[in-house]
Amino acid sequence: MSDELDYSNIETPELIQQIHDDLYDGLVAEVTAAVNELLSRKLTPYDVLTRALVGGMDIVGVDFRDGILFVPEVLMAAKAMKAGMVILRPLLAETGAPQIGTMVIGTVKGDIHDIGKNLVAMMMEGAGFKVVNLGINNDADKFINAIKEHQPDIIGMSALLTTTMPYMDVIIKTLKEQGLRDKLIVLVGGAPLNAAFAEEIEADAYCRDAAVAVETAKKLIAIRRGNM
Ligand code: B1M
Image (cartoon, rainbow, N blue to C red):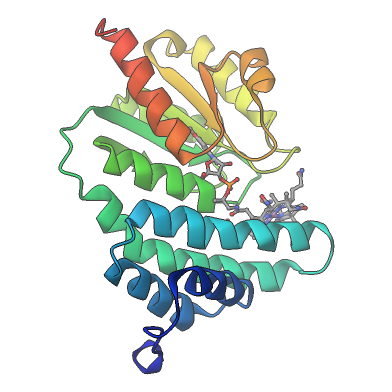
């Protein structure tokens, strides 16, 4: 139980290392307690997110790729990561920034990876955007319906698989067919993507990570509104 875990005697660099290990082992209570301990030491929520949680998930990713970890273990790691994100979400959203615009974001059809997409959603909320998070496995109709309902300034699409990233092209083509493309800023992201792919499918920008997504969204909104 997290109440029984006392990390107060561990130095910060070792505690970050401990989170990497606990995330790897899918230990929800331990990750929760260690995240709270780091926050109590006045590390920013963003630092805890990037150095402890994202850093830990990077290690999981390498061992998954190399066949050292398998899907059940990675799912447990993802659960531990999400437990940490639950603590950080309100803190990242608590900046009091004025609302800048609305974003509809989702992982595309065939893809169930949602950790990175949820991070982007959290960081966008923290930067003052209203975010409508469609979740995973979204086909073009789901994006179109959400656009009609929420009238966003931006849509964000996420894909983590080389087999699902081409579906972003289908969504952009559908937006064009429905006369919606030019009204929107289209941002794409996910580990297998790059700027050349974004250009090829005529997205407005590729975002390497959540911080870049926020920066890019703010910049492109300012340009659209003639403030730059
Ligand atoms: Co999956 N998986 N996975 N997986 N998984 C990868 C992506 C993989 C690279 C692992 C590997 O081999 N090294 C590999 C893909 C290979 C490829 O296509 N090139 C892979 C595979 C093969 C699979 C399965 C096919 C495995 C199987 O079943 N045999 C299967 C596919 C299921 C499906 O989607 N249909 C599968 C399943 C799973 C789990 C369910 C076990 C789990 C997902 C749990 C969940 O998300 N709820 C999982 C995980 C956790 C991973 C890894 C290990 C970690 C992904 C992650 O969460 N990273 C991943 C390896 C890796 O990426 N290193 C892997 C942390 C996250 C913070 O980073 O998602 O990159 P990331 O997001 C970043 C940026 O990319 C960017 O900002 C984020 C924050 O900084 N970003 C955006 C992301 N989306 C954005 C959207 C934007 C902007 C920026 O919009 C504007």
